Image (cartoon, rainbow, N blue to C red):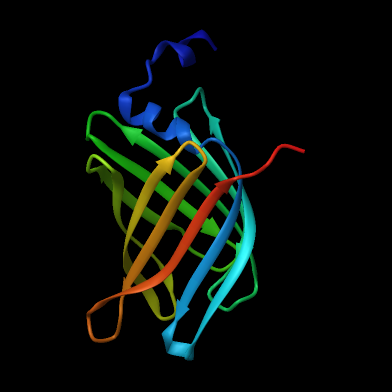
Length: 162
């Protein structure tokens, strides 16, 4: 469809170009409620879809319970609203996580909510692009006292070819 390519991508979209590719991940889960932390390695492939409008993320990693996790996410930029919008689905939940964020000059700062036992929980996340071969996603949740507490940190390192 020729009309698909007619819509120009914005600077917000081009900023995400650095995330495209195959990545090795190192995840640090902070499971204070269980009295332990979990670290695990995984992989992610990030590709443009729908004419370069949305970044698709396919993840194979580890969940909050320390068990294997498959995830599928989409991230886009709405130039009319001037913000990023995303959705996250995984084998660790029956509902979708929805988030939005803004570029602060160094990182994308997200806020959103996702499924949790007994309902939904709010979260904050920071995606920092440290260079062409590394980026970091750090996420926090509100704990039972209403205090923002670290949930996880994923370090993405570009995978070696082959």
